[in-house]
Length: 113
Length: 115
Image 1: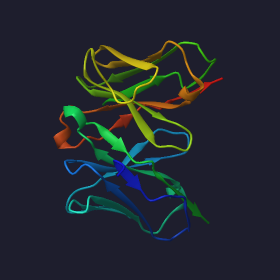
Image 2 (image 1 turned 180 degrees about the vertical axis):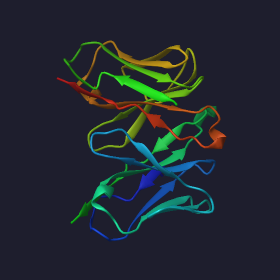
Image 3 (image 1 turned 135 degrees about the vertical axis):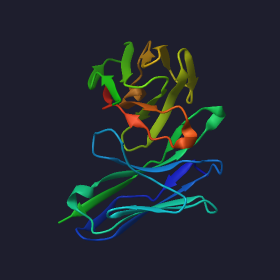
């Protein structure tokens, strides 16, 4: 099982659609979970952290299921500006390191008019 | 506030030439520092990380090396580049106490093309 696996993309959706991304992780000791957004040819930037109880930020909702080692991101009322690649990120803590982050390959979202 | 600087932004180098990419962080002390590579159509691959001056851990065997001569400086090097070294190189930093949440802040990246 890969360390962090995401839905294969790309996702092509119309404006206003609701889209969901899924992610699974293999290290049950992981403590921190995030969704990052990466625009084309740019560096990744934090979209939101994922908390155990689930959290919402405007049109974005993140969920964590520790038992299933599963993370999700829901985007409601998609905008053209949401087009980007969404990266699932998990704290790996390998070899006793601090803050070692493992990135999924990302899922590309394209929102069309 | 903290900032991270990475340079150069783009680089075209011939096979067999040396490489030196530099990254510096301002506004924080004792950061964890990382070098990632993103090849075309692939995810971010962790190359090196460092938890302190002179402390380097390598995640993937390759012809690249890293050094941390100062607390907030991280350098990626190669003596002889290969075609397969082409990619988007990203430097990042995180706060020390990962248990409090470990948001990573990235530099703007260096797009390296080996020809």
